[in-house]
Length: 226
Image 1 (spheres, rainbow, N blue to C red):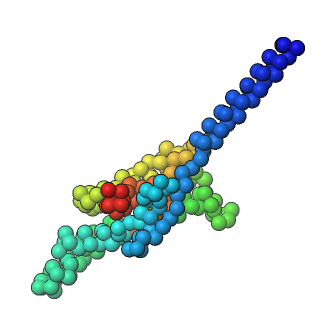
Image 2: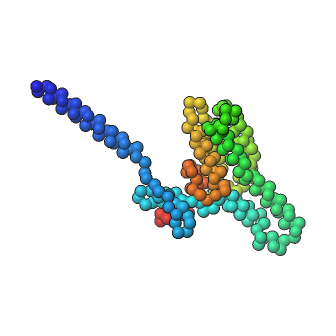
Image 3: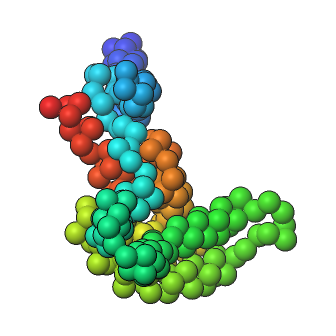
């Protein structure tokens, strides 16, 4: 009888330990609750359960930032060109367009489309293998490296430096992916997706995986948390 009670006690203790471990495990899996709010200035922010602003819409789109930066450096802002001869203005305009073309989002967009096609082909004919994907992405990377000759001259701008780092990382993630390790290629997709969004809008990017987002939203986030 004593032995039976002892065995029952051990079983009950074991169940209690398992239950407690399960609770701890579940606690570890609980995600922090967040909510989106719109501030009086129209800016969207994501706030955690403690009321802290953890993400914010961007201060500007990358396209607007680059457009303004190139114009300022080349002296083709309206104020700069007001008193310049037409021929000089025309020459500067051509240089402006050539420089801006190096920053074109075409490479980013093309890489994003290829990754979408790999993960979510619209039809069986659209399906591509990982090998083909990596070959096509490698071609885009060569185009990117050519563009870097121009883009690198603007690396002193924090957003441009972040842009370069993000694109390089995305290309590297594709390169190291494999059939049995899809995580890198998923990361690459998320980076290219967010970069394409950041190019044109100030909305909060979907995945939140780029350095660019941190740079372009950084001042507002700092202001909210100070």
